[in-house]
Length: 158
Image 1 (cartoon, rainbow, N blue to C red):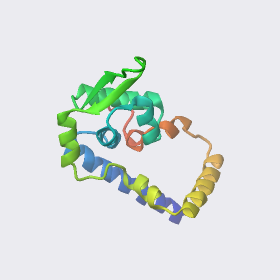
Image 2: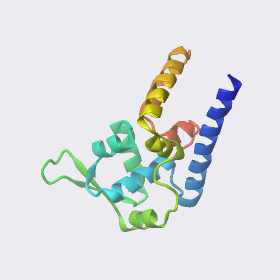
Image 3: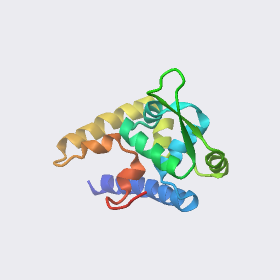
Image 4: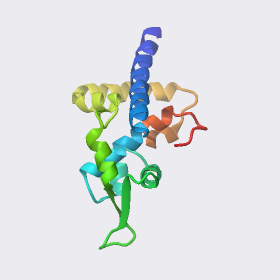
């Protein structure tokens, strides 16, 4: 059991260090940077499309976009065909930040999962699902949150 626990510590510790480096160099959370990079790479995304790309809830994506908008990194404009939708684009400042940043746009864990063979992902899904089923207290809301926000202290404002 302790060896498995140590492996989780390595995974989470490595991911947290990466997020800390990103925040120190960009003053953005890992999730904010990932969202900004996706918006820059795919201009005119909707908030819903961004949420799907990041694997997060629409409301969480909307909060990320609002933070980026408040920092003048993203502009929001109404969709011409459907006024209920908002289209997103990186500002010149946001695009410049994306061009300068050397950190990967996704976290270490996300990148490792993207690169993992399908059989490894299936085994992980089954094993981690079993582990979650035996845990007494499970935060089901965390499923739709970016990891950098899961790691952040509850009182911390971004």
